[in-house]
Length: 318
Length: 225
Image (cartoon, rainbow over all chains, first blue to last red; front, side, top):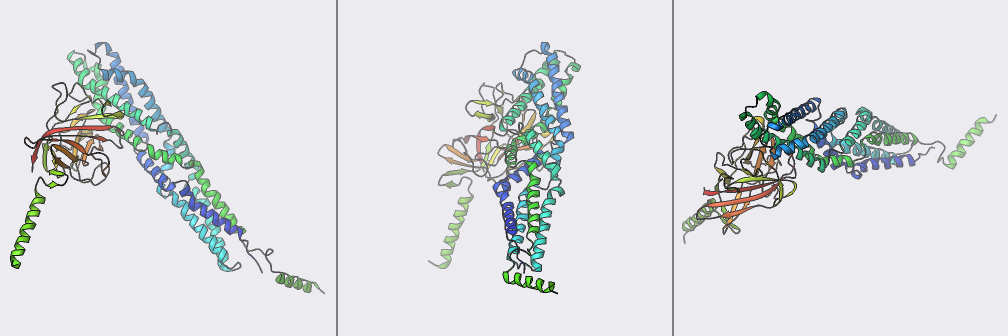
């Protein structure tokens, strides 16, 4: 007669419950979709082409600023908007350029995270395997120890454990999740309300400067017979400003709209830990399934043991 | 009374109720609802201080009374915090019905194509326009058609459908905000001349001007429908 070890299945059931509860504890049902919204919101801007366009826009504005400096003595009057623009532009340029560099450095990380399954599904990657683990463990505990059914349930539990281990590898989480962690950390200084307010101010400063260049300075200098070639960078800026504004404003909007979403993602456990949230429980479940095999030593009834010993002795006698 | 006479009286009473409810100026317990066109008198800064209809925007963290205000370089006013408004193709705001934005809400360079309420006005080189739509383009909320109620000489208006399009972006600038958040627009009304004023503030939620506050002043006359 054999007996089953109960503790491996009880422990497996507890791990299953932990998997089910993990998304609740980490508030993944609300935070993960917000993360998905953020990834979607950044999509138009996290490309090499868009970053190159923004860099080109900064160069256009910078050239105009240099030209204003060169024309300073000939500008009839200094508009306050232009003075503010000229004063703040170097800082704006440096800050925006640094932001674009951060974006460029994290393009690969972003693409890796964006290629993960939809964030809205993340909690269910814990809940569903957890439910199956609990169900198999409970059924295993209730089934007769030596039955074929028990054996099948044990095998199913082991396979489920292996499946949970394999999931992060299938989704390439071992490479993508640490990249996501790096991206989240890199964006930390950018994704704050204070930073977004500062960048909103950049837009107003540039826009105010552009308006005064377009409406005041260029007409005045043109009237003063300043050659158009000397206003080339300024007119390029004013001509392109609506286009620049049409890309810059939505990007500021995307940053602003996703500050809360970023905070939600930041509040989740670090991304690099996520693969291990599958591997460790999966490994434990698989090992526990193996350990739950019925024992031939433990729990053998005394009568059966005596019978067995007697048989051995009889068989051994001459 | 015969049965046919009773039926005739009932039909007459019903007709009177229907007529009353269809009236342009339906009376309710909280005042008279004014339906029709609220013409927009063009804004001007010719006298130094603004007159007519105009728009201002308070920067994030500022206050409606002290600002700081956004200076619009395209404003024709000396004080460029004031952006004068001009009537659109409909002549102004229709109360009791929508003035939706066109199917293609933006023209070239992000300029608004919504031109029925106000004539699109340049704001940082890109024109903004106003529309009122059953579904607010920014929030996706269903919003009622503009409703203006008169009580004495005071106006109270639900302008939650007031939507601004600019630079490829949509901004709800209603009062109250969709889902009845915040205060309604208020104003004055002279029943004799039809002259009205309406003013309201609306916090911008989301987008590049998130946290900024729009301040709207409309002046004109009511043309009852």
